[in-house]
Every structure is written in structure tokens, then in C-alpha cells.
Length: 306
Ligand SMILES: Nc1ncnc2c1ncn2[C@@H]1O[C@H](COP(=O)(O)OP(=O)(O)OP(=O)(O)O)[C@@H](O)[C@H]1O
Image 1 (cartoon, rainbow, N blue to C red):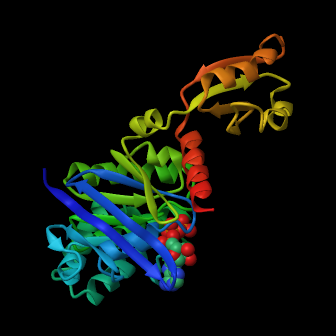
Image 2 (cartoon, helix red, strand yellow):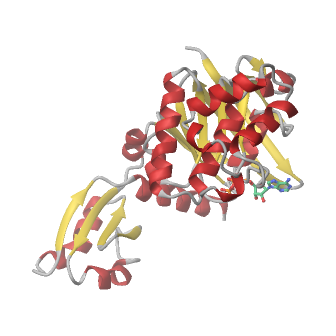
């Protein structure tokens, strides 16, 4: 298998703080991988090391076949990096912004390049609109266009959809899958569970450590979580009552429904048994959601860290 990213032991310290600790990542060419983890867990730091913007303290491997420690210029030439806070000229149009980026990077055949990129990303009809007047979704699409101008083989996207409405997020993901279909590899950090579910695999990091990796279903299965839903008028009132009871590790609301999760089926069943007779409540077992597992992984890592 060919890997777009294949690094081992990636490590970064800031003073005494270990921001990224011995992380291995191997992403096959053309796949879309999600990068998840709580705030400050090391996602941005990892992404910046992969594209050579930050020097790793330890680790070895390749990005697009280049040594990620010594060939950062080659990697940058073939990688599109969309930062969390992308910047652009508000009083220039979309087209002018893209032409500006093309000029700064000295890209050849600028006009044709910008034409093609506008076309590819569905921006032709908006090309004359001032960037400052665009909604979040269109700004983000423009930012994606800017990092696609040089036809990268790898896209590193750092929370590209933060603050963007659901329709624009869905359109963005349609674009990502199209790009992946054309052979481009994508590593995208996100806090959205529905986005994680659109990825071929996810890597979950917490406190700098990789704590889980795999396709979403496998991560859910491997979690060992047993989850019950409780529905009904009284469900809301039960959350506090159930927290801390034998076998109950996590209690969370999903809309009006309560998810109660734990690892010990017998204990959990015994705790829920008295509520089963209540006609105002419906209790049934369900698959834990990715969010249940995310909370569990985060909680486990926090306990390990304290
Ligand atoms: N330049 C820096 N100097 C010192 N500490 C830093 C620096 N950059 C990041 N850190 C620290 O390293 C840790 C990891 O930060 P990073 O930005 O990689 O996390 P993240 O997972 O991307 O977070 P978020 O989801 O909030 O974007 C944090 O504790 C952060 O404060």
C-alpha cells in the first residue's frame, strides 16, 4: 500500500509540556482521515509538523514520500494546508484573492489556474463578490480553493468547518469526497461527530497521546461500552439520579433521550432494573454513538493524566 503520510514516534515539546507524544500515523493515498481530540490535545501541532511548519523533537517517516524532517520544502509544494483562522483580503473579490495567492506563490498560468479552480470548487458565479461580504460557508470554500491552487496531492485541513452552517458543512464534505475520489489524500481535524463519521478512519488524540484509531464502527466496538437509552417524561430528571450509581460511567442527553453507559453489563442492568417497571419510561439497549465513545476516551485519558 502507498501511504501519503507515514510517520512514527512523532513528538513535540513546548518547554516541559509534551504537546504530541510518540504518535504514529499512516494514511493511505486517496483516503480521508479525521483527526479528533479535545481542545489542546495536539492536533494543530501534529498537522504543522507533518507539513514542515514546525520542527519535530522526535519521530521519523515520510509525507508524500519525502522525509518529513528534512524535505519540508518538497512537502509544502505538494500539500494544501488550511489553517483554523485563514486570512484573506476583505476588500478584494474571490477571484482577486485567488489571483493574489497565485502571484505570491509564483504559480504559472495564473489566469487559467484561477479559472479552473473557481470552476472546480463551484465558485464561478461568486467570483466577483467581495470576500468580506461572503457568508462563513463561502469564505471557507474560497479558503479551500486557495489551498488547492497549486494542485496539492495532500490536504491538511485544521477545523475547516468551525462556525459554518450545516448545509455549507455538507457541501464542503461533498467537495472533500470528490477530491479524495480524484486521488487526493485528506487529513482533517474536527470536533463534529457527523464529520468524523464521513471519514475512512479516525485518529483520536488526547493530551498528546494517540488513544484510538480505526474506522468509526471499529472504534465504537473496541470501546467496550454498553449503552442504554431512556426515553419518557421523567428521563430528564433521572440524569442526576443515575450518575455515580453502580455500573454507570457516563450519562448524557441526546435530544430528549438519555444515554446511560458503562462497562459492566450486570451492574448496569441491576441499576436500571428498578426503573423498568415505570410506565412513563422506555429503556432499551442501543449501539453507543461516536459521541459516547469520544466522551469515554476523553474521560479515560483525563484520568490517566491526573
Ligand atoms: N507555540 C506554542 N508554544 C507553547 N505551547 C504551545 C504552542 N502551540 C501549542 N501549544 C500547546 O500545545 C498543546 C497542543 O496544542 P494544539 O494547538 O496542537 O491543540 P489542538 O488539539 O489543535 O487544539 P484545538 O482543538 O483547541 O485547536 C496545547 O496545550 C497548547 O497550549
